[in-house]
Length: 296
Image 1 (cartoon, one colour):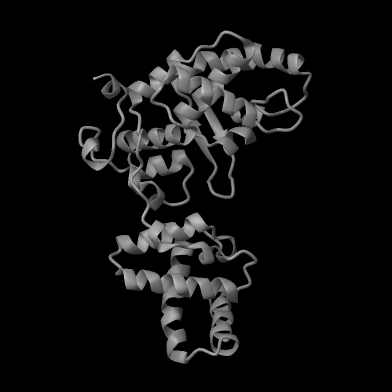
Image 2 (cartoon, rainbow, N blue to C red; image 1 turned 180 degrees about the vertical axis):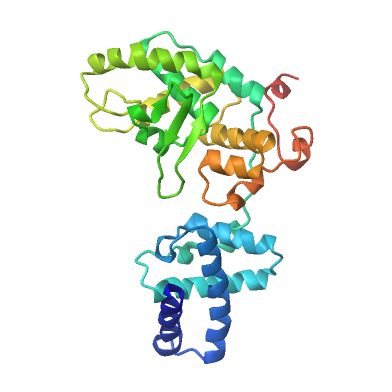
């Protein structure tokens, strides 16, 4: 029903507003129907689609074997379709096909050195011990910065050793098991460090992690943390690298579907680029930066 209404709007836009031939509309219509079926399969509303999701759709069609000419046709059809249904910001206008095929992640760190980053990051002061807990959340649970800032105190379930991550515009909600290496530090944070930091910063907040600033942003704290990590662990580039590395580990250990869930991805195509056959073959697929290589 909804699909038919959208297609009727699209037809009027193409034939009446743009004045195109019916033959042209028929070609566009076939592309849009395929696109709407993909949106339905991935629980995405047509007016809520993002640029990244459009790139994933294009990647999906390429995996299906569509020629570049066909892929270019999708771009044109989607550009007109989004205009027809009244999207204020049309992401298809920013869709550049040269970027559609997502690159294999580079600078992946293996599990052993992810553990080493956590172990070797110094934590002496109250703030540094808080930062170690933040680092553990990003290293072992693969959270993004925005997700970290949205964590509430009740989202951490120490009794069941898991963390709840709420839904965001680009990710699904999920429960992620806590890593054994972070359990002691998180318990210390909840029962000892966090109450002291609330007094020290003179704050009242339900955020799990917070800074001394007025708002909820952790940008300053995260920037200082990353600078310190890079001094102590030269092979760490940024937080995105840590998330990508964790997703690659999940794919290897649990498979695509479980990695999709743990990472909060809307659809499995976003995780497929991490589907390395094994870490032994990883060198052949990407530039694998093992820290010890730098010392060889």
